[in-house]
Amino acid sequence: MTHRTLIIGATGKTGTELVALLTRANRMPRAAIRNRQQASAHFAKANMPLEQIAFREFDYARPETWDAALQGIHSMYLIAPPKELGPEPARAFLEKAVERGLQHVTMLSGATTGDIEGSLLHEVEGCVQELAPSWTILRPSWFMQNMLHWLGTTIRKEGQFYTPAGDSQTPLIDVRDIAEVALATLDGSYHGRILTLTGPELLTYDDVALKISIAIGTPVRHIALEDDEFKRLMVENYGWTPGAADHTVSLFRLVRQGKEARLAPDVEEVLGRAPRSFSDFAKAHRKAWM
Ligand SMILES: NC(=O)c1ccc[n+]([C@@H]2O[C@H](COP(=O)([O-])OP(=O)(O)OC[C@H]3O[C@@H](n4cnc5c(N)ncnc54)[C@H](OP(=O)(O)O)[C@@H]3O)[C@@H](O)[C@H]2O)c1
Image (cartoon, rainbow, N blue to C red; front, side, top):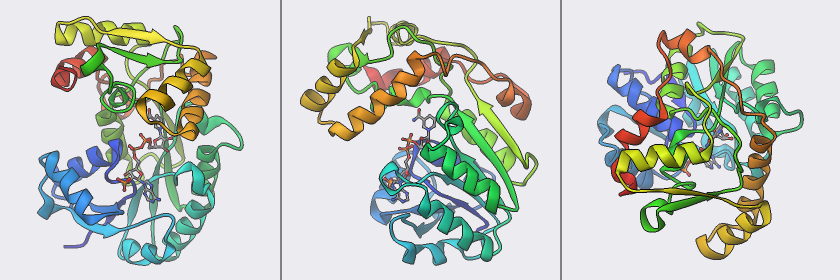
C-alpha cells in the first residue's frame, strides 16, 4: 500500500489524533518519529493499531533522515521545528519535499504567535505559503490537553495547578477538533486559507478549575502567580528548565494581554458542528486527575 500522508510530530498531541483518524479511515498514515521504540510504546498505550501505521524516522536536526520520510508523499501535516532549531530546517525540508512531488501542506501554527512577525511560527508559515503548491494554515488557541500534561500535572497530588495567566480568558480547544479539521484539509479543499481554531467558549483558568472540580467531584484550585513566582516554582519544585519557564511566561503574557480572547467560527465551518466543550473534555478525562 502507498503511504501518502506524512505526519510530522506524529507522537505529539495533535499528530497522534490525526494518525488515529487516518488509521480509522484505512489511509495508512506515515508517522514521522524520532525513536521507533518510544513511538511504538506511545501508540500502543493509545490503543492504536501499530500494523496500520507506517513509521519513518524523521528529525529536523538530522537532514539525513528526510529523504526516506518523503518518498512517495502527496500531502503532509507539519509542525514547526523546536524553538532552538529556528525556522531554517523547515524551509530546507519543505524545499526538498516539493522537489520530491509534495502537493499539499497543512501546517499547525498558533492563534496569536502565528500572527507575530519574527516569531518561529510566523516564519514557518511564510515558508509554507511560499513553497507549498497547496497549503492550509491552522492557528489554534491553547489546547485543552495541556491540562492533562504540563499545566495539569499537579492536580492529582495537590488538588491545584499554577499559571501566570491572572484572570485572562482563552478559548481552549480540544486537539481532537484540530485533528479533524486537519484531516478535512489534507486534500487541498481549504487551499490558501488560514483557519483560526478555537473552542466554543472563553474560559479563565478559574473556570477551568471549576469544570475539572465538577468532573471529578473534588475541589481543584487555580493558583494565579506573578511571572517571577511562577518561573521560580516551576524550576525549583517541578524540574522545568529556566528556558522552558521563560518561554511559557512569554506565551502567557500574550494571553494576559487579551490576545487569545476571541472566538472564531472556523471549526464549525469545516466540521459542520460546534467545537467540543471543556466540560465534556473534563468528563471524558476525569480519571487523569483522580
Ligand atoms: N500546546 C498548545 O496549547 C499549543 C497551542 C497552539 C499552538 N501550539 C503549537 O503546536 C506545536 C506543537 O506543540 P506542543 O508543545 O503541544 O507539542 P507536542 O504535542 O508535545 O508535539 C511535539 C512533537 O514534536 C516532535 N519533535 C520534537 N523535536 C523534534 C525534532 N527535532 N524533529 C522532529 N520532531 C520533533 C515530538 O516528537 P518526540 O515524541 O520524538 O519528542 C512531538 O511529536 C508547536 O508548534 C506549538 O507552538 C501549541
